[in-house]
Image (cartoon, rainbow, N blue to C red):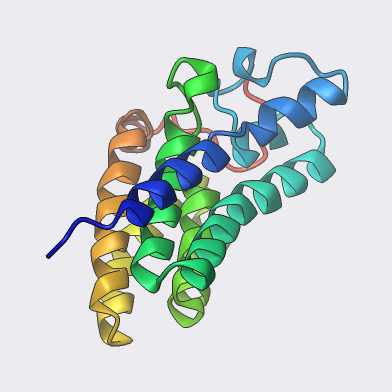
Length: 199
């Protein structure tokens, strides 16, 4: 099969768009300083919530999910479905390893969900519901993310989307890798629950 340069363009475009650190930008604009100096040191919505600003946490969640969804939908519409999936996956990589922050970014949960919602919305909705259910029941964002990530490839396969299942598996592996310290804290009982103002 011939190499399609538009797939490479989708990867680069998705990565650069995903690299925008909305959590860091919003908290700095709000006068809260560098979000990387509090809590987990992450730039995602869960750590933004530790500032006590629920509005900023919600905005971060929406924007981090939206940047991946936007990249996926745009390249799927303009190029092809595979290009859209590549762009969504690349946006996830950009969020986790942004070039602007020396490749030290967030853990990718919102970006993961945004990619799935854009790639196959039924799969995305079920994955979001899995995350929400575990989060409400157990009160740990990291545990909810891990369960949702593990479920996503199976949900995609059940929906008949092997291509999305492959993408979801790739993203799930990275989510588990990015949450390796959370896994350790969950096991030893030191993981802070959702909303805790860890300093």
